[in-house]
Each structure stands twice: as structure tokens, then as C-alpha cells.
Image: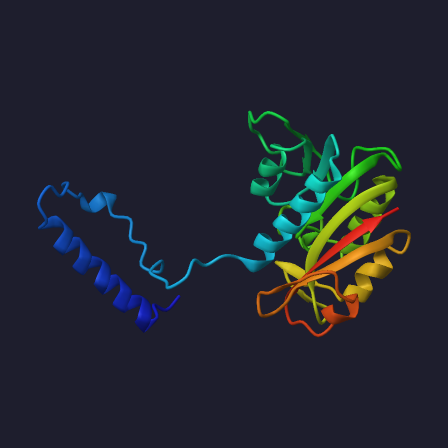
Length: 233
């Protein structure tokens, strides 16, 4: 990978700062083996991943407002499930179990294609930025072109009548970016969950803005948006 000119200048600035720091009164001795350059973090604003930031807040607020005593998450970001455990009992399902000693957080080894739950048994369920990976082998799972479709059907199977499913994944022009992820149209997702009722569609658009409770059709023209679907059965 080529070192960009602007990155090179940032490394030059780093070593300049190091030299100045070492000459300051009370400066600690700095060993070369302990150097840990972070040259890309001098930004005018705090950077964040808009997909994960907004989707996790979106789902957290809904689950908190619902007041459910227990919630099941399938494969979402571990920070999100950790924060959820502060407000409810959380069970985290993943092919790679999460091993922690955190109260109110349990983990089960399981596949989104074959969840260890009976039909119609989970009242509160989330799966955020997960289903687009299924079947691409990225996490050691078997290759399957229908991975996302099967994952959606399995989530629909275990959701209890009257329960809530909070679901998110990339939306826009349908395509596969092997082996990282797929992008689906919002129409495809509504078709995959045809047995459920859509309560809300929200979108993190290509500009990084959260647009809440909008027409799912507005997800069609995105290059790499994040569709947020709130379903019930």
C-alpha cells in the first residue's frame, strides 16, 4: 500500500512533536520500541461511523422505550449489546460467542440460519449490520448466495406474535461486494420479511444523516445507505 503524501507529512509532524516533547522540562524518557504514532487523528471534528452510531442509538432508544425485561440480539456490535445490558437482560447469539463477565449479558453459540429458539418465541429481537454478511464466508460461515434471504426468514420464524424486530443493513442499488457484504434494496428486505408488518423505516443516507420514519422507497437511490427497519408480527 502506497503512503500518501499527506500521510507522510503527518509522520514528519509526529517526529517533530517527539523531538520537541523530549526537550521539554519533566518529559519522560521515550523508548523507540514504545513509539505508537497516531498521525491521522488531528481532525477538526470527531470522526465516527455514521451507520453504526445512528443504528445503535435508534435501536437502543426503541428497546428502552418498550420496557421489555429481556432482549435477544443476533450478531450486532458488542458495544451495543453491552450498553443494552444496562437496561435489560440481553442474550447475544453469534457463531463466535462473546465471553464476558458482564451482568445481564449472556451469550449463546448459534447461527442466524439456525437459531436455538422455537417458532414464535422471542418478543424483542435485534440484528444490526449482520445479515448482509451471511453466506460470503467472511466470518468462516458456509458460502451461500441466499444467505441474507435465509437469515431474514429465520429471524421472522423466531419472532413472537406482537413482538418487535429491529433490523438494519446496507441499502441502495443491489449488489455484492465479495466477500465483505451485500447491499440490498429496501424493497428486497420488505419482500424477505413479507410475513411481518413494517412499523417504521429510517435511513442513514449517503451524506451520513439520519432520516427517521420515512418512505422505504427513499432507500432505493443510495449508494451505501443504512436501512433501519422496525417490524412486528
